[in-house]
Image (cartoon, rainbow, N blue to C red; front, side):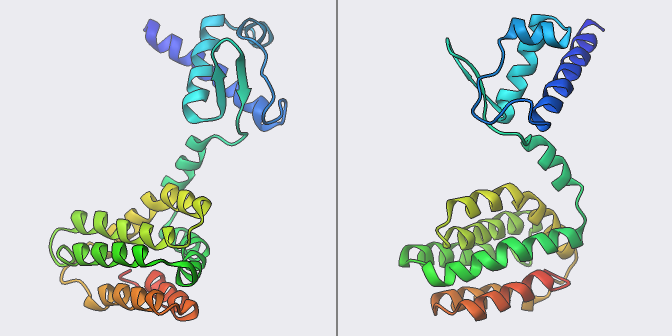
Length: 218
């Protein structure tokens, strides 16, 4: 029971701190008040503040610098984003993929290197062995292929964003391919997509990517 009470107090402290951060009480990069100051301001114990600050540091919202204090790193909690992603619908996932993946594929067709192509061919060959067999293994391999496609755009921000979103992509693939036999055309589209990127044809690559995302069987 004492553990539950402590957890509840920490959650309350987190709610208050997140509310202040969201409302712009502190600017990104600003040094936050000390633990005693926050404890007094929030009306809670210093230990509770310390636990709440550790959670915020783990989520990446604040940076705790030993001997210097705590600094605000961002105003958006990644855990909140993950909760939204985990509750999105299949159609919402498709819409988001069109925005992120299609544009990234267009850039990849323009910027891909020979090293990118070698990695993509290897990933596609690896995933082909699982398409008609174990679905979980295929999804894992297919996500590697799609991440490499986005990586070929050579935009670290896009790559990181797609990795953050890829768990939703995996769920969408699982939902759409959870049947047998699976439509071979879906897998063939992956090969056509890679061929368009290899030919440095962004328009065709983006068109195939849209078709792949909008395909009922993914």
